[in-house]
Length: 521
Image (cartoon, rainbow, N blue to C red; front, side, top):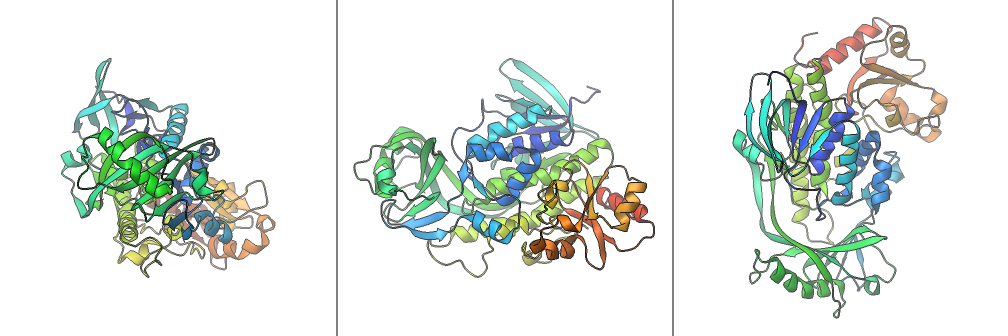
């Protein structure tokens, strides 16, 4: 027991746990993922992959596989039923992203049960150990490690890791055992979800939507899979005379609801799976307790409106991964690990509130004034790098179409015409990157006196598309900025001043402050 079995043990092999395993293994961390179920999810859960998650999957090298497994997002409609005239409710999100040139990728639709095997494959290819049919019990924290018992059909073992990530779902036994509470409110009622197969072309008549609110049925219809393997999902509320614990009876109750939702009175759907569930709008009091970190539904729950839940969890994992990697290498102070909660909690609370706001809105009605658009939430996040709490929710985001380039914000996408298609392609996902103009004094100094752990990437002004040169100047250049130091999670750590004095020393100090935020410089 004197030797570590791995650096990080991840409990939960769903979307967030597997994403954490892939991100951590990308950082060179020795990872074990343990999941109590025998295989990845079979029932569709999250479908919308927002633009930020697609950027992270692109950096991980799996975006093409996800696009091959899904289809472009087609937006949300409202109608009496699928066969009747459709009213647009939410336009396809990629139109806004592409129109403003905010990202090299667009939001996409790919079911969670198709993404999970892709993430599992990428994590194992990079060296992660992924164990299914494995129950994790007897978790204990020690001064320098965490131990847990892994129970498997072929026997058990005690495993010792530096850190543990709890991605064990909304009811998280780990969160409960740590005594971490939840802040928020329950969403009343029990939802029913049915996965079914049926030919709905007679209702669609060549039209297409990702999702539809069918007023005649008081239910939602969601497209699943893709054109080559199409399934459908019905979402509605549990009626008083339906028994939640009898899937067969529930399936029979849902057939007339499916017929009402599709507008096909003689439809004979093949119901493959039925689930019931409840939800709420909650954020954990703390995302960390000692060497254990909460991610995904273990740290927050939200209504499904807006498709924020799974994406928020994946982005939790990405924020945490590089920090754990730095701690495992001995580069970071404990204060860096505290920034996981400090940075994520305010943004998560805002996202939960936005999901709750959307859940209370009547489908088809205009958005209330306090509703933020999904692209702003995905790309406009703004962390307080000193670890202080946001003064109010409005400071958690900025307009991604007018990025400030401030430390704590996402490094903005600027299209390039050189070998790299985007400024995001210049960033090293496992190191700090200094991005600047080719004439930057700081970049030149770094090339002559390299700083360990920093990649230098320069851009010739001619490689910036003409219509985006002003964005380049606003974010990466201008009269006072000599370039940006960007963290492995694509977040700006420091803006270099336009001065020649001690350029490489300034970068060393900036990295020290990023890795050891409690250090006095």
